[in-house]
Amino acid sequence: MYLCICKAVSDQQIRQAIREGVRTVGEVSARFGVGTECGKCLDSISEYVDACLAAPPEVPAPALALPPITQPAPPAAATDTAPVQTAWFAIDL
Ligand code: FES
Image 1 (cartoon, rainbow, N blue to C red):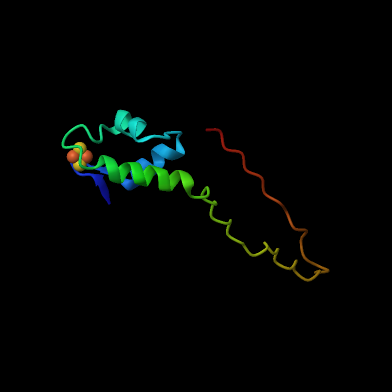
Image 2 (cartoon, rainbow, N blue to C red; image 1 turned 90 degrees about the horizontal axis):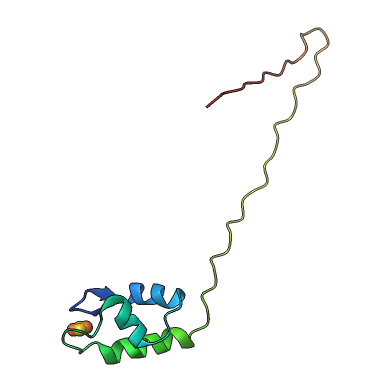
């Protein structure tokens, strides 16, 4: 959602700026130029900045729980077959 229509600055951009250290509406204005045209956005941006700073820090999403990797069962022991050979490859890039 745009918080400053004149400069086409969204709430996401402002939230990202706050994550990067912006703490005042003046700093938001210095970064994006908000409030330098009609100025009607300054009050709402100031409230938004205050709300973002008052909110608890965002918690990163939990890592996905992946199932354990299982190895296929080894083939049944054969008595009269050739031994299993392992192939190795080397690729120069
Ligand atoms: Fe931000 Fe006009 S809406 S300067």
